[in-house]
Length: 202
Image 1 (cartoon, rainbow, N blue to C red):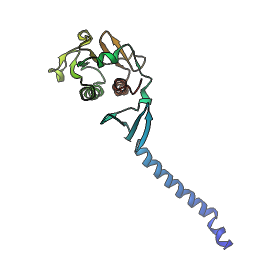
Image 2 (image 1 turned 90 degrees about the vertical axis):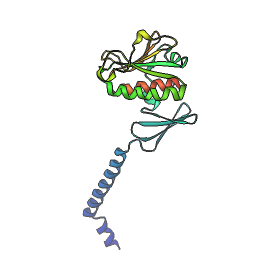
Image 3 (image 1 turned 180 degrees about the vertical axis):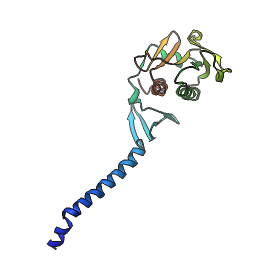
Image 4 (image 1 turned 45 degrees about the horizontal axis):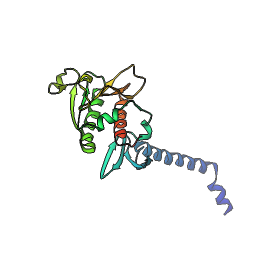
């Protein structure tokens, strides 16, 4: 028996076992990397968030399951200045404006559509999308900018600015400006605004 033990733990066998372990661990690592958000859960401010896939976070508000791109912990440091949230919560109608020439127009379109869906369902607010300047694809859109904002009908303006210190939400009168520095900021700003409106982020 001792002789067999020595053969099993021989240098050759140990090298083989080591190689097999590396292959197994590499396979496990590949699966994890392919599904980094699979079955992830996280609590925040009394809300339970689930991530079935990378870039998707769901939480239940009332009877509805709502989808976000970012977990609130990831974007809680985005500043909301002034009374931006109250301007929106105290109205029944809001304009969502953007420039057709913005370099992040695709990301803005996704964020705009997200707000168009969530504002009526979550807050009973009717959104109308408009553009700050003419654009071939947006001839049917209303022309809207911050000069059209009022207390009764505020404007939410998506804007990319290389001069921005980072993503932030600020106000100019009754105009709420979601100012991005890069493309990844757009969805973060949309999520941060909704988290604020739902009081998930204080």
